[in-house]
Length: 332
Ligand code: PBG
Image (cartoon, rainbow, N blue to C red; front, side, top):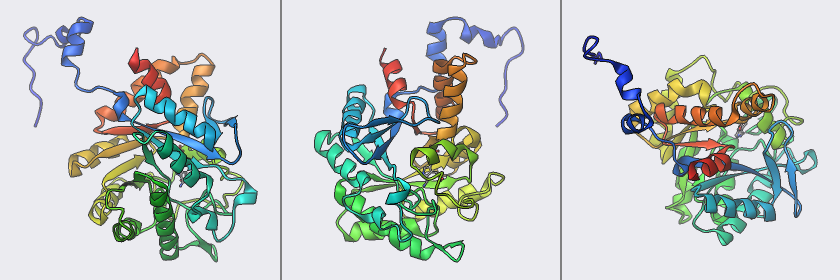
């Protein structure tokens, strides 16, 4: 449909921009605290809040401090938190056994959060990169990131997280067939209500750099993730991935990184109409914070504008490290 606009002066499009009241009246999209998922990093120890240098304002927290953050999230009206583990090189192994250990920091954090603030939805990360000696999301055999053996490990990881009380499983690994395997295992284990938010269209992106610092994967990572994450030059492939993941049982889908992929968010929403999320990733966060610290941009306004762009692109919600700041601003 081609938009038709009456000729000037019958149509003066500036008329509906003339005051805050009228702008509010015609505003198409709103950003709400209910749209936010707050990613947090959990590490070993107690009483620890350690800044992540490449993500100003973001902390790695020990389990007790993650619980404090979770209470803060609830007080601010943020509906969900996403737990990522930080692991040092000494905690990483080739067999990635830490990933499905019921007592790893991530699973302890999930249990502690659900005990303290059961109303807060807890999302997880399913991928081997935070436990793997080489920083990859799957097992590496003779230089190849192997798919099917990795999926078996991801299923074990998923079940451990569901047992710990997770509400939303977040596979960020990009292996083929993992959604169906995870869904089947969850059903068989009695976790019918545990949801899967699939990182369906995840690009091999340089915007993940600061996250890899935050989880301790930068030092570990050998090579790149181009054989499993998507080529940023492709868009039709994103739709095939989303279709596949929805068919395999994903309840919600994600596009990542965020601002570089707004075109994909729109296509995914228009094509499938499924709950669609974007991840405003670490590099996007770091760029805004760095420029704001220099006084080159108004950090607060850029933050709000970038998040509104996701809503305009059709996203239902956003994973963002800005979640507490935004929620505080929106409460004013
Ligand atoms: C890894 C994972 C990554 C992110 C979330 N899960 C990084 C990667 O794929 O290397 C990135 C998040 C961010 O940059 O904020 N499974």
